[in-house]
Image (tube, rainbow, N blue to C red; front, side):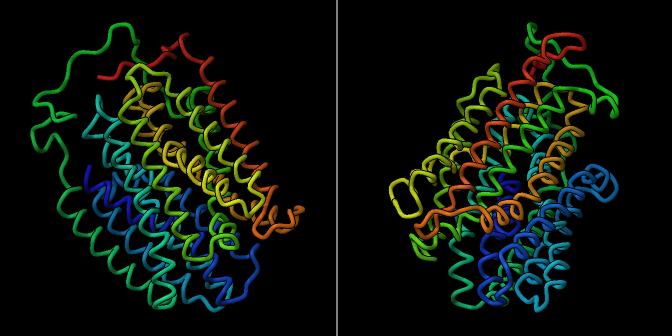
Length: 415
């Protein structure tokens, strides 16, 4: 779990929380349009979605350690490419490497690392591992700003890239090559495999791959995750530049880090306090509702009301981590174990293929929608994010109607 946590720190720090900083740095140094650089971020995430969908196959062929190490190298090369790109085509070429590399250290990868080790305690274990993603934001958002200011973007990217490769390589060699079975253990540290399940919770039967696309549980779960992350990524990609007018570059970086600190608190509380038999779709819906409250706070702030801006950071940040960690936990209880290894990469890939367009879409909305007079205000972005996350709640709640009939559409027993 500690290895997964650390890999997530680097993966999200460079591949998820880095692009909003890269957007600002590239625009400042090259003078390229907001729409152009936002589209590059879209390509970065879209390429990653294609790789995520193929991660199970890549793991089977090359192994988890090798794919993780290759991802770190590709990510470092890609981010350096962002920094040195002199022409737009070079920027888009760099996104092929950064997009493909970071997902090998992203949500589906962390789930693949943790799942063999935990079943009964998976909510808490995934929460702790995914907290590495939030720490990546806390550390790297201000670190990127400071490093770019001190060394310039190219040298900062090279230094951070080398550290990322070295750390990931060591962790993959030492900790990812062994499974619980090789150590004579069962999940959750048990000496022998657990044999009991809760009798009142029917086990889901495995489904053929083609049947997933007709399963409303799968469709609504994928839609809820995709819509929620579309709104989330759309705002986060522009959050730094929206906060700069009111806070300045350095404090805006700290505020972006504070959003991910709030994500740590939100994810940890859910992971440790959520009852085993809790309706996880309701928990995810509540998390999105808190983020909607954050968007409303930003809307009311008008670009210059510091208390409301900071309230928005805390409220929106509280749901950032749960948007990633709760869908795999919903899949754990709604699908058979043999299906979960397919369902999780698929819903993550669908979500990333969808939110890949969010930075560009929100960038276009920001350029062409009417803005408030206050510097940094972007009311259309906050309204759009709130409405999209309301649709995500609707999708998750619609999926609750699919349980309890037919082929055991109720919650599966968690050993």
